Image 1 (spheres, rainbow, N blue to C red):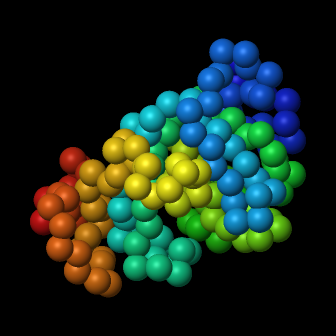
Image 2 (image 1 turned 60 degrees about the vertical axis):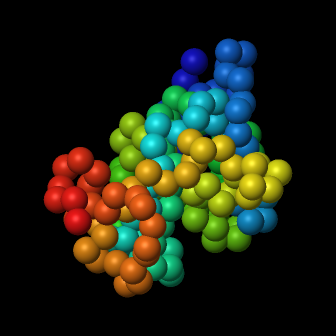
Length: 166
């Protein structure tokens, strides 16, 4: 069921898996890297940590979290670029950032078992068609924020349910 035959040894569903039924599709800006997911996200969060701010060039990062077994690449494995921010190296040392080597689009954060996808890369037809499961449930590392957000979402000092709620 899981693909082990590609050059990166990625632990994702194989394109040959007949039981994989795509539910959502995502792609980088240039379309070179494309992938599908077969399930709704297990959670969605907005991260305000300094690493996300710097790597995204934005005040925060929004991610929808999937199990890796629910993700399969349909194009562009040879265009994946990895960056481990802890060691500062362009290698697939988990956890790491995944981007497209052609256009530079950040594709996801890859964890050991999870895939933190960026919802803006998914094709929902329009933003008004975005499923509720992709909408953020909380803010994490909110103490590092650079802008205040006035919403009703819980705000955590660190990781959700493992830190102080602000």
